[in-house]
Length: 200
Length: 388
Image 1 (cartoon, each protein chain N blue to C red):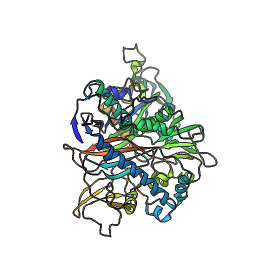
Image 2 (image 1 turned 45 degrees about the vertical axis):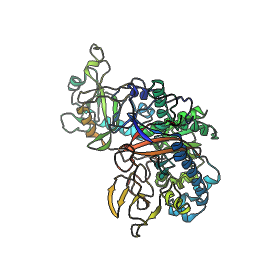
Image 3 (image 1 turned 90 degrees about the horizontal axis):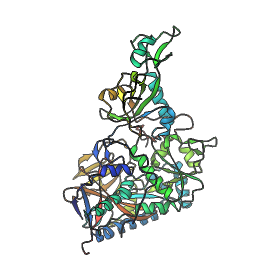
Image 4 (image 1 turned 135 degrees about the vertical axis):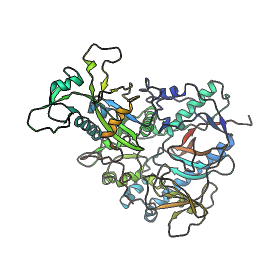
């Protein structure tokens, strides 16, 4: 016989159950609850996870009043902060009182194709108003984007069936996925010269 | 050698999922394609592919032993001077190689012709070694193929055997680059084999490798990296800011530095210079655009490239095909044009796996264009001995 009699696997497939059948697209965007969660996935480096998180934070909407924020994100969902851009487009005036922002419940981040280019990006996720009200079956804990669009993830955290609007706001914050940079004494293996176009 | 239409297992996507195969579509296109299979006779496999691949693997090792001490040849291969000692030392220390894949043009008639040797970072090992094997077992169990059907495939068994010869003091690290599910799965699969061989393992990203205060490599928890399987080509390492650390470190790399000699397209002209006229080799040369090539129809490939990027096809002195890609460089090799043979309307490229320097299995990819790239489809194969 030219083939092995029996083979088995120890690791492969151990986290595979529960992935939907359509979960085989080019995009790989996942929901993470924290930077630690992102790093633990082994999909992204520490510096990538950090920049995903920073990006999500800096794009978190800010409101001039608690009431405006709670109207969109639910009672008790907002906290006073000093970062972020006011939702109405006005300038944040430093030191003139704080803005109200929804608390970040996590972020969705990853690599996806946009107009033929491989992009990396992230956006913040928040608990919607329904998280406070009586939980309807299946909606408790649903996370939403800043624009209120629900985001669903499978058991591996992979976003499935994201609406075009959700992906559009990802694209808005994204950058080409090729450039990688490392800091300090990590990241010294960063794709050689291949991505920089130089080399001999 | 025939291409036979086959019924697709109704639950194949579920089988794939249960066995950790999540990249069976790439860019939305089907990558694993079991609606057909290639059927070989035992002679076609043994005499047509296995024996030539083993002979070439041995020839390659002879070549390495000659080239590692030869500055002129190392320079022709484009290996930076800074790495020459590392290449030679790793060979003299007998650092082990895990695996590689020879890609052949072969249609069952005439000698298989070597396109190239993916000796450093070959992928598609999981689909060839495990999922293809699983497919055949399922097809025999369901009665779609006879009990006598076989496959050229002891790849996983050889991987486990080879890992068990590695003298790893503590943990062996396995790293791929961020952002590629396929690379990550390949590394996870090899780590699976290493664990079956009794090794302690840890998976990480190349980007998370760091150095300690003496410049030696450490993982994310600042633990030393003694052994590293890297799905990361040596030609990237040359260009990285960690290159000086690589030269001075105490890490054993798999594939080892001496594989730089073989994973380089310059291997093809070096083989041709030594074994001109060998039935399994195509004429090859270091290509100089200002010099007339030795033949009118040929392929020009960058000295260092992977996955079919930046390849030019010249037919009767006219360029007929060029593939884009970002692996461009200034130095090229030429190889006499030998089109992928058509078998029942498709163009298969036969990848013979070498594990622990033994030819031990076959994986076939087919493409619609003339160059096999990472968008090709993987099609399983069987051996049906018509004498029996």
